[in-house]
Length: 259
Image (tube, rainbow, N blue to C red):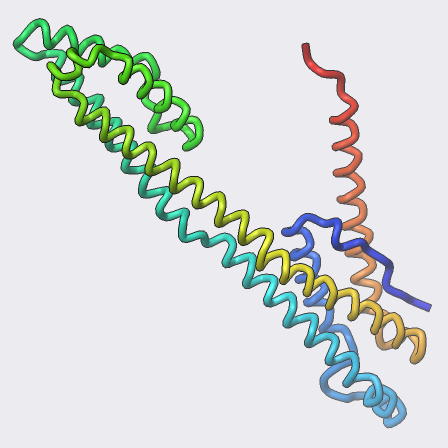
């Protein structure tokens, strides 16, 4: 008697769980629901089982669709746009400050030109951070701003540079706040609606599996064989992937620490 194999779907990664459930959803086309075809005796048998099975398939499909919608929503974080805009703003501020000091190095007053060269050397020390990853850029700007604030205030005043330095600091603070909001929103979505819809979809899957197994046992597995065979193949493939990942993780844990 064919039966669907057990799979601890809750142990899969979120995207893995969704991908697996979507494949199972496709395979439900092989279940005996919908139009009644075959001999009168077969039609009578299916008529008795179809309403139950069809309800389970519909519940499962609805739950998977809700899971899909939640994942799509989680990928569209409104805070991302704000973080991107503030990142662009701090990049522009850094370039403006750097260009200003470059120009001031040619100031006709030699003393002011010397002050400009000193401040410009701090920018040169760290290089252009606007091409770095956002987190790395924040580290560079943090160090740069500390060095600029440590510069003799009289020299900054002579250069009229404080307005540029303060603008860069303001833009960096705005980015950090936006990045924190983005992270918080991502976390809330992940533990909120995504988790909720995933749990519901996996529960609907287990209910469908139990129903198919019960019907196959009661009515014989002929009408369910294709679905069972296909899904079992998917289950074995998923188990192999999970096992390989666990093996890799174990090997990584067993590696001796580097000195």
